Length: 148
Length: 148
DNA sequence: TATTAATCGGACATTGACATCCGATTAATA
DNA sequence: TATTAATCGGATGTCAATGTCCGATTAATA
Image (cartoon, each protein chain N blue to C red):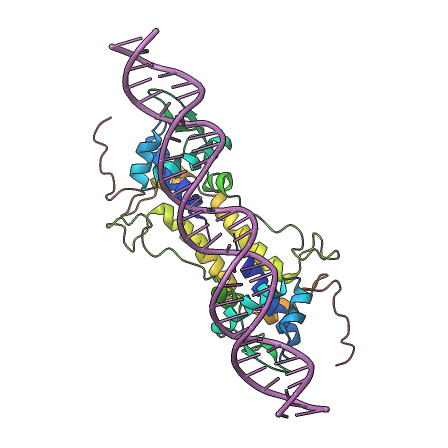
């Protein structure tokens, strides 16, 4: 239902949020998120083109978030790599339906709207802050931060 | 987000529900739903394998619904051709997450659950009964049924 | 200025979704 | 029993998503 690319992008952004505002190399993100390095590179290029991350070439370079984790929603990430396509006009091209979707397509579009709504209301910061026994990308919940 | 095949299957089942309990030929369904005939044939075969429709070869044959429209949900149709895959275990294979999804994957799975929930609550009969200015697969709302 | 560490972007390979075609099969009926 | 109307299922084609590889480019620094 969601593409592999969306899953990869979310993992990557999640790691970047954890490390924020530090930048990370593609290599490092790939290792932590278990995404094929070469493909992740393409995904990150997409995120960069759409203003979610910025990239810096050369020594000391890497990828970092453009926004802070509390300003960045899951929806923005999803839409950057694989936009949620709402149904705006009748897929059969029926003239009389136009903007006014028939009940069938209305139900489907409502489902899409629900996903969009849910994703738009969740920031990366919220995902990372949520108290839980399992922490994104990590085998254990980070206890007290050791040091930096 | 939803596959072309899901869209086609919903259209086909919708027409079958309108004609229910009559059976229709693939050719006829294809014409009304504007789906490529040969491909629709494959989609219908899938629906038949999964017990949504039954098919009858030979003269006077065709495709018909197994259930009545008020017993058949959108979810059953969707799941028959392209099942909504919930996230049951950590996609990264992290041992400690197991059943217990991290907040990131929990949000994504919640979105899937929402779609599943919505689709499971809508029957084909409801879709066709809903008062509206646009009727599924048709340019005009069927006024008084002419005759049969 | 040479070296090193990093991303960029183009070419290519693989796979699955979407789509087409057609001979085989099935069933009604003249 | 021959004809006709219908689905079935296998072979094939096309294209986008996924994934790999590598030379070009960029920037820090010794």
